[in-house]
Amino acid sequence: MSDKKSFPQHVAIILDGNGRWARQRGRERTFGHQEGAANVKTIVRAAGHMGIKVLTLYAFSTENWKRPSLEVRFLMKLFKNYLISQLRELVADNVQVHIVGDVSVLSEGLRKEIAACEKDTAANDGMVLNVAINYGGRMELVHGMREIANEVKEGKLDPSAITEETITSHLYPSDAEDVDLLIRTGGESRISNFLIWQISYSELYFTPVLWPDFTVEELRKAVDWFTGRDRRFGGLTEKDH
Image (tube, rainbow, N blue to C red):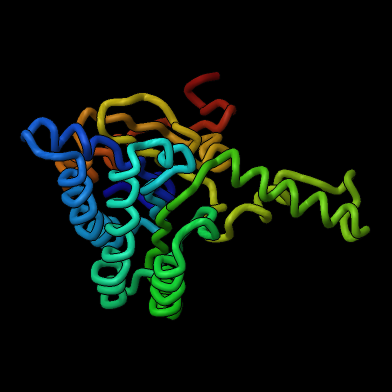
């Protein structure tokens, strides 16, 4: 791999294409979600071994509630079972797990599993894994703006003192770090309301590979593509002068 300077520290992935993957095989969309969930642990472990510090996965957006109720119920059950059996196994890999999003609308059983999973992995100091459930980038910003507005109202914060750092500090703590590389599987080329503040200077990698087929080799391919990028953040390099 390349030097740390050009290696992605925070990688975010939009897990897309599970339903299409299943349909291509003549199966129900739920089968694709099941296979996609099974692929998460493989990719998480690979990311940790590669040296990625933070991995944020888009599992269920605030817009996904519009899907057929049967599919939504299956996904919620899958999250609950997955949190029990899969994510807790990452304790052995020193992965610290966080769920980002508005969990208040989730079932009590799922919320309990989320709390237990986060507690079980809290002492781990390896890679941070964020799983976004009922997450929306705009919703995260609205949540942060409300907190800032309350601080102003209470006289704890002067509006003229609000900076980019102020906003960043009011995002969900574990996903607030800038994203270096955003990967979207499944062939679509859009952000879909994911980490919209954090990806301001991200490199965007879109692949037609459907999520259940996204292998460790595909992850390496995306990281290698990233390390070859000339990241100038609006500035110029010597050769541009």
